[in-house]
Image 1 (cartoon, rainbow, N blue to C red):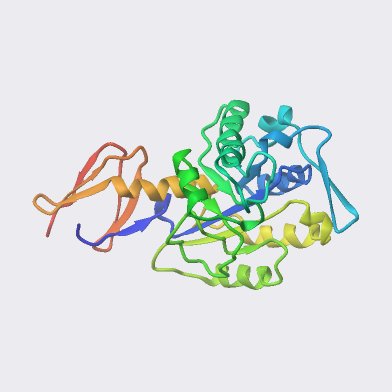
Image 2 (image 1 turned 90 degrees about the vertical axis):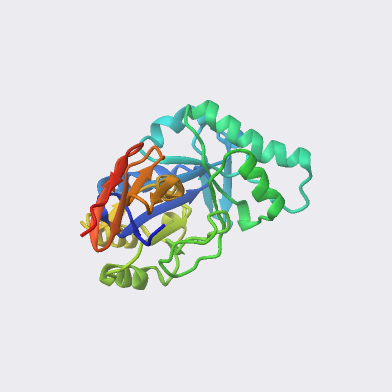
Amino acid sequence: MEKYTKLYPNFKKKAVTFSFDDGVYQDVEMINILNFFHMKGTFNLNSKIMHDNSAFTMNNWLKNCRISKNNINFVYQNHEIAGHTSTHTDFKNLNDKLLKEEIDDDIKNLKKITKRNIIGFAYPYGIYNQQIIQRLKDNNILYARSIESTFNFNLPTDWYTYGGTCTISDNKFPSLVKRWLKLQPKNLKIFYIWGHSYELDMFHEHEKIFKLYEMLANKEDTWYATNGEIVTYLKAFEKLKYSNKNHTFKNNSKYDLYINYHNQNYIIKKGNSLKICQN
């Protein structure tokens, strides 16, 4: 195929996305902030411990209660739900039986509870290996998040080992926001922010996060999307074919695709072809 440049929807080159783990009640506040600024996030849940009596304590003082499964669809409406193992297990020394219980069952349970297709995952404690990745692929998981922040805005080469740009409580977050706002990229870039909503309480971050989100929000050059929306859109380019013979693009995907070709912007509608007239 002759060279073309991928673009995000509406010919944008920048995307902002968020990812939060563990399904705690602080997600309600985080979602309220995201909704206020018209941004989207992905929330990674543990399906077998989402009930009224499920809680854990951080730093010996902060008690975090999990949202019950009966409230999941209401709380996370308009945001993505992804897997995080059934019980937030440590993946060290797992056998096939435990892998089934923690990965297969988690995805199956979340699908049943939410009536949604689950395509994403976050590794508890950031632990993964090729066996785990293959298990995710066998469950039609398209991407998984690790915990090794890149501190840059480059798209990952592997969506199963990507650690995002930075966490919400990282001291580099404010400077990265400033860098991002000045960025005028030639190719696609992503600002992937992740963490846990309870960090709002643990580090007293409420005002700081609100201000940083305000700085990021409502930019005309930016696509605000869930993790899954970005991954599925980019993977759709694998079904974009080009014929040198008649200079035609054929979009075999389920998504309208946006490209720049010979310094011109084009939309190639889903399931359609686009012939490029040569001068």
